[in-house]
Image (cartoon, rainbow, N blue to C red; front, side, top):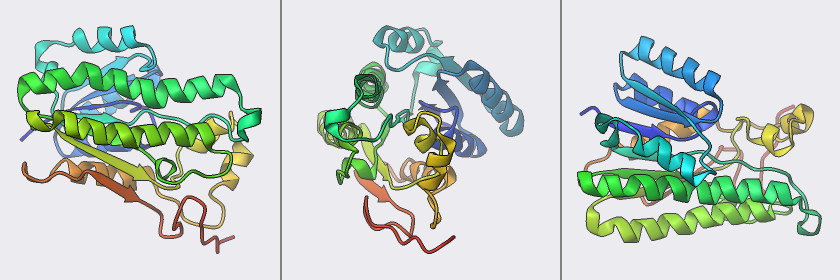
Length: 254
């Protein structure tokens, strides 16, 4: 059955890989992000290669009014959303709490927590009306284990962990599935954004081991949405083989 899948943060990393995988399997997509040129490019490519419908929406999930305007203005066909993938998220800065940058903190809280809430609050009622749906929240190992200098980023991902549990309970009477996928170290734009564009510092994060690829996480996201109606994965942690916890790595290469 063809589904309508809404993916936030679809212009790169997990979001782009997930959009590509769902498209390859014939599902129609709503892809969101803040970079219109990348959204438009991805939408054109996915439609051409996979013969599916793609609706690109350019807005900032941190702005509640923009979220509501974008989703509520969708044509009726596109409001029958089967899967919401709350993927958009970021880390900004890495340092002790006493030296924290307020702008970094607000960016992470607004994106990772409030953005996820705005999207869920807007889409979940539509799913309830449609009597079907699956919400997938992309968390992190940082939401399971706090690590040095990760303070606020970890706190936002702990919030995603708790919100996922709360959503699962609240949406239970409506038959809406809720799943959290929590990746470990993955080579995306994550570290480049965290270190404010410092490419050398970002590359050092992944030295000596094979990190996850976006496609690895996308395959897991896709898998949990293809299970029978009576099966729900509540929580799934995916790690590189070379990573045992947030702080334990087997760096044997290079």
